[in-house]
Image 1: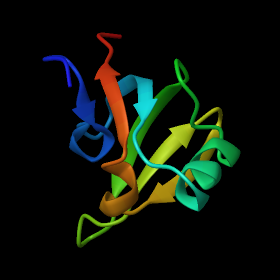
Image 2: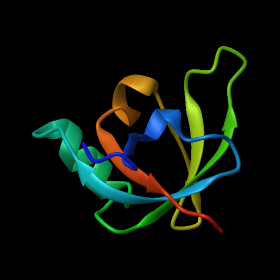
Image 3: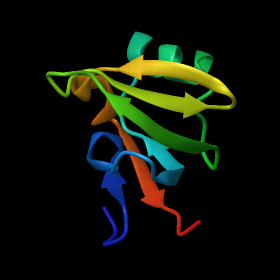
Image 4: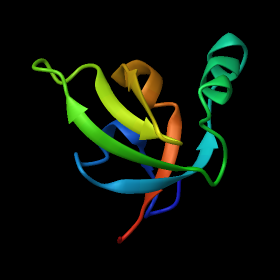
Length: 81
């Protein structure tokens, strides 16, 4: 992982990032791709649940909740917007 790359679950609330890679395969990868999480797409961390798991993300205009176990498989680069 390059220095600027972080797992999605570490993205601060209110921040936007670009997806660099998905590091899982099989059904899990297919599900993430079906949700619109593809390389070079932008994703924004919207809010956390009271227990901080799951976290709601804005992906292509839709709000999707992902558990940390799923979000750790998505590597992103935070954007300075």
